[in-house]
Length: 233
Image (tube, rainbow, N blue to C red; front, side, top):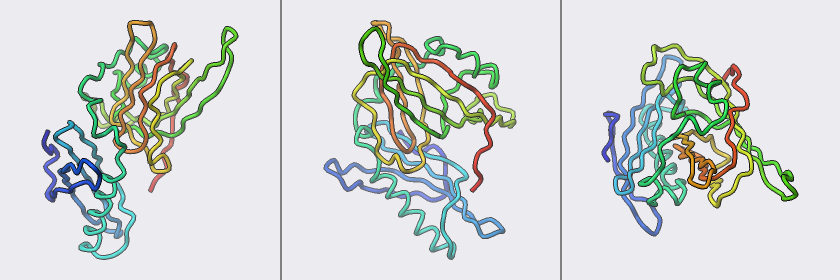
């Protein structure tokens, strides 16, 4: 796996953990007329097929272009250091393909966007856990909301539709709910729903940044699709 974005600046960084793996980093930085620095970046770990990145993000920095570039490199290096441990595992090699049919009321999303997304670059807005009793036993439901605007539509014509999508997962179970960097903005690499042989639904959220999910539930449902006005930097 190599860098794909063809950014004009590249470098390699060796992560300071037990594995000491090398990461390839590409980025582009420019300054708008109002002095704001905007950057795009891509980070790749070839051995474990890992890739994260994003474009047109605001760099929270004031100074010269040279100072901003030095600061950006430190931000990207820190991003690598904060990656969760599963990122250097084999989890991604045998992931199930997503199945729109595994999600109740999936049509609510398809009606707006015209396709079933991978949810790449969607922003995680909130996650809530609720305990309840079902059939005399305790269980837990999870509800989460994301900001999606059709940004991963392969047939996009440039018409963004900003929406808040809320999902409900009923009777969740699983051992991976990684909250590393939960205080930082969480963006989705992709979000997959698939059916298991035992009738449950697997929910597999691979992040670009922030926390990840690999859980199982009895029911996955689209609860709500509503227009959303994102905060502007």
